[in-house]
Length: 201
View 1 (cartoon, helix red, strand yellow):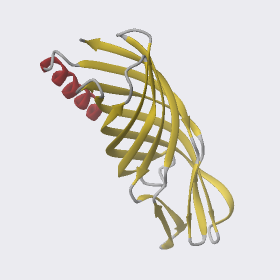
View 2: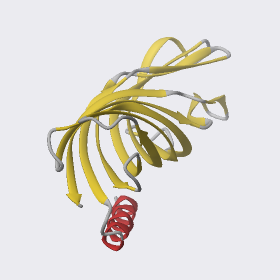
View 3: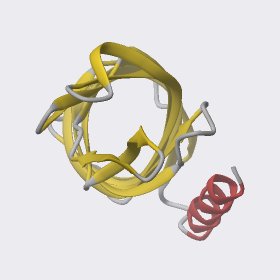
């Protein structure tokens, strides 16, 4: 949370120095699609869950917004392994936090403006079961959606986002000195919506 507060503070300080730019704060809530990673001998599955977070944006121009996004999901992890878990078994609750810094480009000039963007950042993976280790991964993001503005200050944001953690490695299955380390790229697709609150000019 300290990292989040620091990044938000930097964004808001930049906004103060750029009086002609508008700041957007968007609390968001949505749905995280389940994902699955197959490896030799089994698979690792993240269950679908809800997701909530915040997006802070600074309009660099009429069409481009620089954004920082934080989102949290509370999911469950299941494993099926030919040796250790012959049947699919739920092994732990999992809290994932995603942090992304990037930019979106908006299209058109009406109250409804489609957008698309790219971002990069990191994700933290924290299993509830202390038997499994927490991990941090570098994560890339692709975003697309629609903003609809009711006024200069208030709007609605609907979006879909694909997060791509690079080489997630989160579970070691086994007992004693032997086992198998489960790692790979697990895509994270989500759909969310939120209320845009505009500040500044």
